[in-house]
Image (tube, rainbow, N blue to C red; front, top):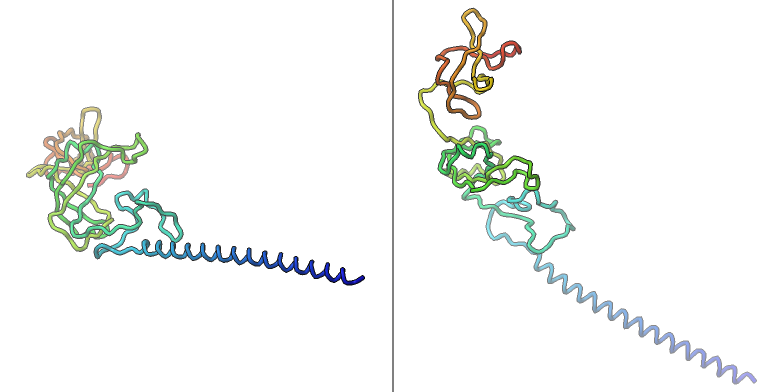
Length: 250
């Protein structure tokens, strides 16, 4: 009576073994598929790595981002997202440096292409470099491009007479444009001239140590000095501030 029982047990074992063998084969197939996919990914990433090798086309200094658009440069760091056409680094041309300036709209009528320029780097105040205005665009733009109420400027360019090895890309400089040269004229600081409607006057020190208002006729001016054609003589002592404010200067 036990013989059929043994046959039934053997059949269950065979079924279990076949089922286990089928599962094992499926797992092996899955592993083989995963291995093939990983190998394909490795091969693709190796190709990508070859494309990500950067070779400098010339010797120079590397600057992160695009110096022409400093406000839009991303924060360069490992793992950041990049896209086609994105400028990550720039090697500026150092052999032919120029100065880009924002010429305020109120000075446009005074400045012309070819006007002489003196350039002084902020970090090298003793270095004075000569140049000339090389380009002034036809139309102005807002200094803050997205703010239509911001002041308008002309994105102009200055070329040097001679290049200097002390200049590097990105330096801040002070620019003095010589629009006109006056000889043998009397001039005073702009702070010394006051205006009342259409009248211009200065505070002139008198012989007794006091002061009085003296009407003057002014001529050409810049940010620091103004020409006085009438109303003052060389050697006169004037005040830079209203005397009653207690900040008189001779």
